[in-house]
Image (tube, rainbow, N blue to C red; front, side):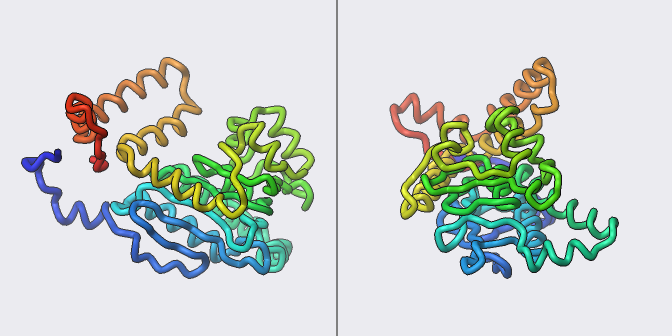
Length: 287
């Protein structure tokens, strides 16, 4: 029940702020779109799907573009071959890093942090389908997703201190305690030990556990269910979940009042009302 009398968007404004990503050709990982759900597949299974300088940069840029996507309403991130991601490639990242100067190292660490920023800033909910090894930067990618499905054999490790680095990498000290609590996050970041799938579910890192051969399908189903909802409002929810970290309760309540008032102007809000009156299930269109 759209508004046929709504003003048309100026073509120049639309060209600069709306784009389709179904036809995007990824160079350093897999990318596919089925309906409203896109899937990012880390696809170097022979090395347990490590990240490289190239894949970091492309992932950062792609998640940045998702802010303007009109055809993708949820994203699944997964890995090939029974593992999620083993982190930064030892030979293609760790080795070169030990030879870089401080300005170049800061360029790298800012790039990796910008990936997390882009994941948190894109309005699409992100579902991580985690099986097997999920370590280092891979654990960060899972952590930075909105929802996480794991398996009993998932092994998630924030192992930065195992390579002589601080646990405060790519937002881990800010985000992980908010998911599993300060004490549990401290343990993982100080020791670098693996968190098992059962432990991750018990601690709230994983929303639930699935069988290994079903985790990707379950993640896609969850993403599709979310994408079938009021996607503009979902984007507002994601924004508020992120922004309210730095707000007082009074500021958060006022921000939510303004955000909800905006959502009440959407056609999806009207669709939900008319469907309720007609005793039907609403069909949301994201506007």
